[in-house]
Length: 304
Image (tube, rainbow, N blue to C red; front, side, top):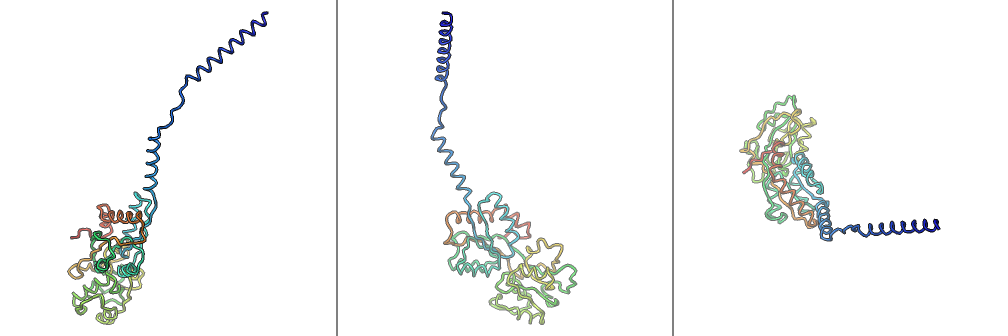
């Protein structure tokens, strides 16, 4: 009898415990699912982030004398815009102009002279309203330190045993020829860029002249000692202060202003992302931040 009563009490206790457990579970609140509007917002933000980081590539044609400064500017720009790959094509402005005319894909053209930009604009290659003058430069006569040259500047260039000189289609070569005409070293002519290296050599008494197809090669010829002197840009001497002597900084009244214009080029191969990236990089080149970098590399940013 006692055994039966004990079994009954155990059964009652188990039933009560089970009921209490079920009541407790029923009292717990189920987790509230995330609101669909919040989820949509998160998805939209993620989509925008992916869109902003979409990689694109722009083709930027730059005069050879801009190579060093533009490399730094690209690095600075990529700190904020790592998704934009900036590909430079650095050469003489005349060569770059010809490539654009021949259909090479190009988004921006940064020239060392107005002549090439004028021609592209007249022929309809530029995006209207994007052309702007960025910097000025100066032609300099340079030699290696301790070269012992008798040359003191442009006027007595003929005293050198050898000269590195850019061709007439290269802006620095054109400016050098213009200065020599203004000094009376060469005869007046309608187009100074047409004056040949042979004509200059003859005017200087037969001195050996090594003609180069861009300004960087002129600098290299002097730095490596292949030529005794050469004419390059003041900005090109950046980083060579311990190796080169500047014999003369040719004044603007002899060369005229050495203005570097930039413009966006019509690129039919570019998609919308590439076009917008080119517009944004152009705006950066014209910014105060970029101006400070140009100043550091010996360019003159105070232009009219």
